[in-house]
Image (cartoon, rainbow, N blue to C red; front, side, top):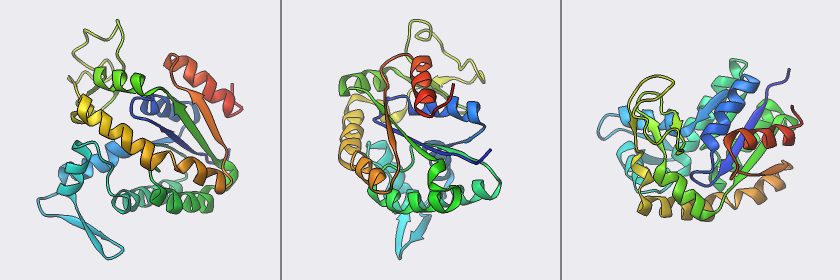
Length: 231
């Protein structure tokens, strides 16, 4: 089977992480979650450390402050790590499902041509999960994730009293960027910086499947599989 490169985009709280995880298991893809990969690099970075991209220095401390305020990481900074990881995974013979990557025009103009080169245009699929702004705010302000592996825990009557992750047993915590004030900033970032990618994807010849992200995760997953021509 040819390697796939699936890109999931959507506003904060649209269920990107949950669906990426399901797709990863269904198709045996590497779940490339930028908040996990790049976030941990930032957390472990020594004070004053930086990377240099196109002649400009990007300090890890400044990137951490951007994220905590609801802003996206500087595109050249994120793209550096995404391209590096993408090449590594392709060399290892792995397909990828992107979650939280390819979120700005800068990334799209560089990562999409790379994916075409490595995986072929026919094997790149884009899924756009649509939810309302009110739903995004509610989901983000009520969700939690586990401290160890950052598994997302959706809010429901069954999970509201949980204190530990059912997958690895670690403590459930609230994300720093899920406060109402920060969520509004993140939603504006999505509208201003990620939504324009839809036109870029079309210009690049990629089909964008728009999926209603409001139903249960199981039903959303069924809709995604149908859009991908799978059962």
